[in-house]
Image 1 (cartoon, rainbow, N blue to C red):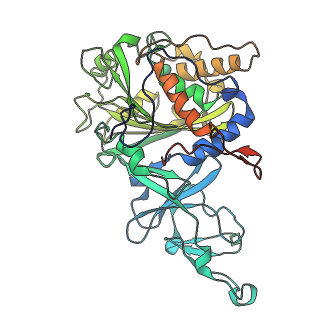
Image 2: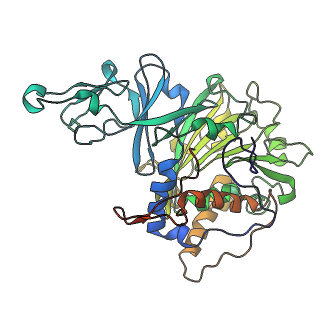
Image 3: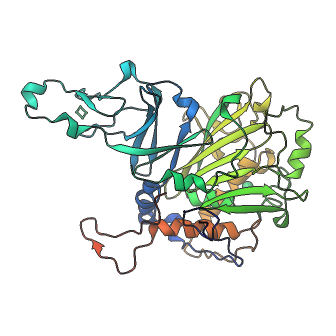
Length: 424
Ligand code: FES
Ligand SMILES: [Fe+2]
């Protein structure tokens, strides 16, 4: 059955005709609100942990945080993806860091060397007979989390019972046509952005600004020449400038013809979504020449890391669009931190000719305004290619944060019981 939002079996919202701001100022600046999001939104949603190629062989692992939950995903001995909470069952120490391949197909805690196999079972406990005479190892397996794969992307959820099928079903008919295995992985960048993660996300789904903030870079399209389609809680963007739905603004598509970039097999037509916003914080940008996967990591209420990875055609010249072959060559790169920072640009962000920096600049400006007690949000522009997607997104966020009417208070945590909007 399809719901009003177009997703099968997944609650959501329709695109509003007359949008209005749903979130209060606190949602963007308040620490308590931020903590609720980390626990009740990111702690119960699907976070992108990487791509299947990161986990090509048995023992390969990646780590990621979903809100307050450190998680790990690995490929076990039979080739199946498994996800666990990245916590030792002895005294809870974080087990592994970053990504890599586990030695001897074992996860060994660095603290007292409790050791687990790739299915999370506890296999070795030093000094067991003397220190833990009655230990039942079967009761101390790693805590499971949920894992799913969509279009080559790996997602994890701290809740082992979370429903990935419902989360991805809303998208299955509109997935990007690009395949990671046919492309080469290129740059991996992290932008440090001094704004709330929702300020950046809402900027990404605001079709109203494209023709104005980005007049010299993207050059549009106007609000009546682009559209965000609803798929469950997800959004997919298209340019409609040519009368068809395509993945690129016309100005970029025309300029791309002269750039020397080579199209990727299967993606040449451009007649697919150009941007996929996978609720809540994954952004996939698909073009005929590259695939960009970004995750917004909410660091504090007013600090966000945009973690971005780029894939392009094998042997292609596609890295140049970023302004450099290597991360170190990209304007704004800070060698001390490895982050891309607005404060490290040598030019004004509007003079660089890169729409990413225009977005970072405007989001930081909006965040500074949000700090003012005089801040008021005015009107949202009507249209699915304007600012209606902002209300849609905000309603989905609120679904995860709204107390259940009439519910009892959770006195142990001092917090209201939280609605469980769906399994996704
Ligand atoms: S905390 Fe991991 S072995 Fe002690
Ligand atoms: Fe933008």
